Length: 459
Image (cartoon, rainbow, N blue to C red; front, side, top):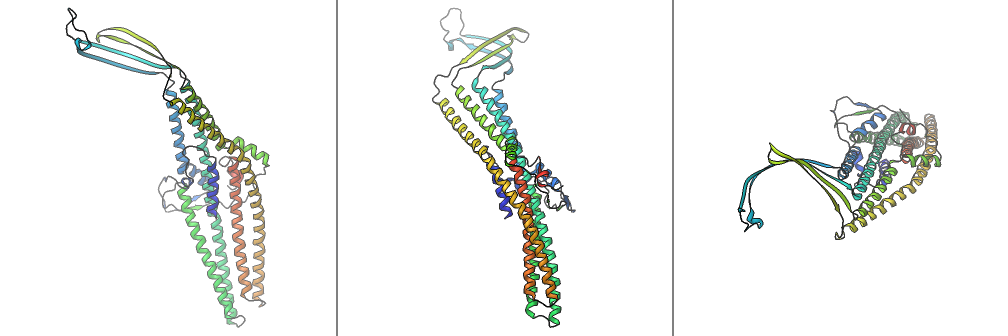
């Protein structure tokens, strides 16, 4: 159930992610290992686990490199608007066949001219003066860089969610394992008491068998819970990039702080200001608008200037300074529908990005409303589960007293033990769900990384 919960959280987190190459949610459960494993278990606080996850988680690292890829696209677009300067040095020795160029029958003109030498050292410059298509493409790529940056910050929020969930889940399973061990010790004590009473002829043999079943059931729960803890520790170690074989010891207790009090209006306002997925969607819509303007401008004339300056002569020691300047005006007349194809594609992309942005904006308030409702429900569930656990413990104490006094058999005692085991599991589960709900609210606001401690609590 818990794995389904965190998977749902990841799917919700990725819902606003509209980049062309969305990272699969399972990537955030893996990390790039660093360091060497030690035989001593590594003490790990929740803050340490999150910090290490932000540094070594594979999802965050991949998205960080996509920011660099977007930056490379911006530089390519910028290069189309900047002057290109080149230097060339050339020295040639040649003989020219004049007849090959049609110079025949001219008195005094030899058929072969040369040999002669030409030395040319020249600096050339080519620069756009007016290119609206390239200018708008640069604006589009700048917006894409901004979107990639917001995607990276959104990836970091997802890393915090994944690592925090695994940490809290380990604490939850550890509490369940400790409860199961306590129940096993209690069952063992009751079994000894039942055997003593059977030997004294107070209870029947079936009471001993019934209590043996309770003891074995408690032992089974211990085995399952301890295995779950160890498995989750492996998952946490992988998500935060610990070296293989490195054991960990969680140093923080299960947080139990109340969530910050927020109204729907206040939470919605904060989300619109802070959510990186919303900012990324806005940047992509801006990029699509600029790309469409670039496509439209590709049908307009563009102006470029080419110039060169250098030394020209028969040898390097006998040269004269020369130069050339040319203004080129390119006017598209017919390009076989290429411009129309670009415009149609850019318009479709723009409509898609605007629809995604509108959907994301509309969904923010619904997501926050759901997160607040879940938080309220889980908070109430914690109190109910805490009360239920206390009542179940009182019931077990009374059943034990009645059994010692010979007023009941082990059936009532076994039922009380089962009730306490169930109540303890429900309390642990409700506390875990409440902490996850607080983290989910922080994610809905776009403030998980920035204000995680405030929302979830703990050290």
